[in-house]
Image (cartoon, rainbow over all chains, first blue to last red; front, side, top):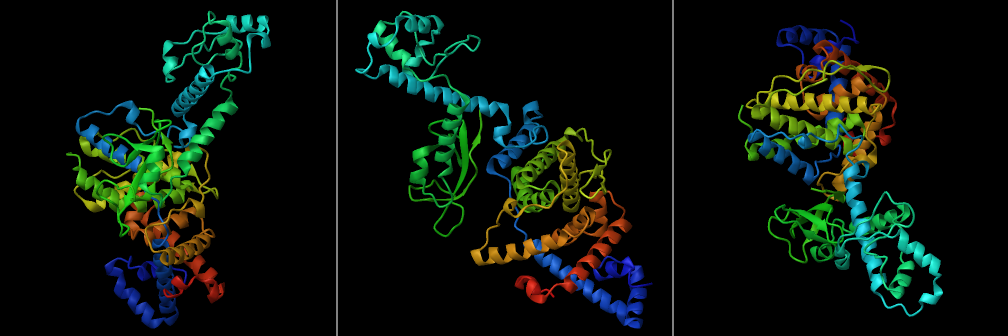
Length: 278
Length: 209
């Protein structure tokens, strides 16, 4: 045996088979350099155990735990839908911004937001602009290119547009038969939902959601998010319910709160905002 | 096989979630992907224990090239005996490892050590967290001097208290190879430490010297 024999390390780590231990112990007695080697290896092992066990470790997000329990319940019933197959190994990242579905939800939120904005402008009194300020040809062109949306636009919660039509896209309800003054106001409507506009809305939503952090009280959270029925700890954004966060509140002694939060309850843990379109 | 009751599953998650995420993070390189891998592992677990059988596994058939050109092989997951804690542990680590290697193969990732900003703090007092982070960061930098295989067996051995045999089952390496990798890895670390000035070693670790 020499100093480079892996058996020395195996002995130091308690991995040498019992039958070989007496021989090794005799070797250590006879060769102090072997004993020193074993002692050094044990020291190094101690450092590694202490250091590596104190390495901080992440944990699953609440929605990931929920997915596991959901899968367990479904497996018990013998159901394994394709949608339950874990996404991470299909998509490059689990980040929601890399999936198409959530973007559709965000786009929907953005379009609804723009629709509300457009509607408000349509309904706002307009003393500045009159029919004479707008060329008749432009109005005609606008009327020809416009699309009739659904009447639900009046409530500002559902809009339609025709993606195949070229030219100005109309957000909300715009009818070519509108009276001239209304049409003139319509000419002053916001432009189509460009990428930059969607980005701005998204940024605004993200900023608002991002203000919720550990230490934020429930009263402040409730200004932006509302609890989801039937899913403990999950909150949906009031402005865009597809955006959700998982929240755990803490008690006064810093432990997880097991009862309903009070307005003063502080957030103990909060996930990053994510999209859930189901 | 009867699926584990929800309470057992919760206990299993509580016990293994962090070690598995830490292990997966050491392979895939970032926390978010590691979480996805571990979620996938547990979903497989509940399905297999519910009697849905082993799913298609490219595992153990496709070697993967790690950062330094060494081949990281995948081991077939052992038969899952949910009533045996050690079996469950070995199964979870094996499947986590295989899914993590699948993940980096599919995304052409190079095995990398986790970045400090990817690590999450466990629930500890601020001073304790700082000291732990300091010691762990220092050690992880030290481990960068090793090959991915050496790092992996060292993590499994000292972070998760697994035996040579268990590491062999998880990694598909022979017990002799595991012993050799540990031996060489430890010697290399010792030689680096020997040359490091004492005050460069975090206080928390000096007590182990």
